[in-house]
Length: 146
Image 1: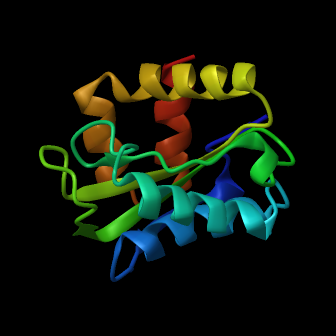
Image 2: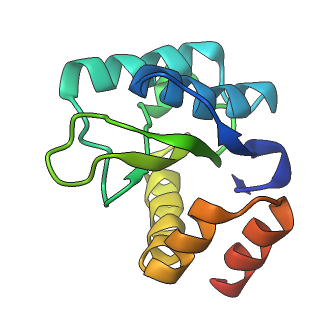
C-alpha cells in the first residue's frame, strides 16, 4: 500500500478543469505503476456520469473508480492545485487538493478512506496540505496522524 509517498505527491499543479485535475492525480499513480491507464479513464467517466460525488469536503476531491478498472496496488496520490478548480459541487467547490485513490478490493478502499478521513478531519491538516511546498511537510502531517 502506498499512501501519499513522495513519488505520488505533486505541488502547485496547473490544470484548467476538473478532468485535468483527475488526470493529474491518476498520472502520478500510473507513473508509479500502481494503476493502469484505463483506471484514469474510469475515474473521468465516473465523474462524467455521476457528477462531483467525490468532492467530499470543502476544497477536497477524492476521485476513484472500481478496483476492476485497473488497480494494481492500493494507493493514494495527492495533487495540490496551484489555482482552485470548480468541480460543480454546490457546497465544497472550489477544489484545491485532489487525492487519487486506487484500491484493489472493497476492504482496501475502506482502509484508504479511513486513513484519509483521519488525516482530513483536522482543518489544520487541510490548511497545511493546501500550503505545503515540500514533501517533508506532507510527510510530517501524515506521520502525525498515525
